[in-house]
Length: 82
Image 1 (cartoon, helix red, strand yellow):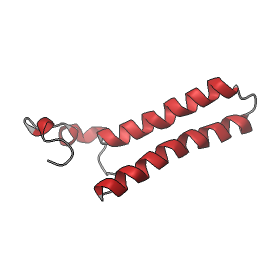
Image 2 (image 1 turned 120 degrees about the vertical axis):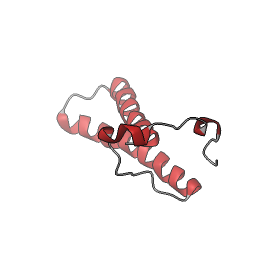
Image 3 (image 1 turned 135 degrees about the vertical axis):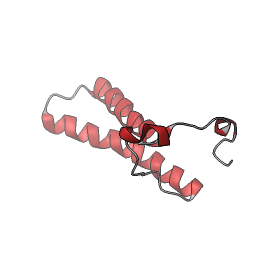
């Protein structure tokens, strides 16, 4: 999982939590609708990211590939275009 995948996951979770606190759902069905809305916010961000960069957010990396996920020395200054 890359940093952008983690960020999008966190966006979905924090949005769902905020919606849940605001609307106070009482049933599983209401909670499910809120979770779908939270995921939709992250999906919109994902689509915008992919459109701007012209590449997919989804990767085959996972936590077992930790050394592949780490930023190499000097890469942190390059930014997204670098």
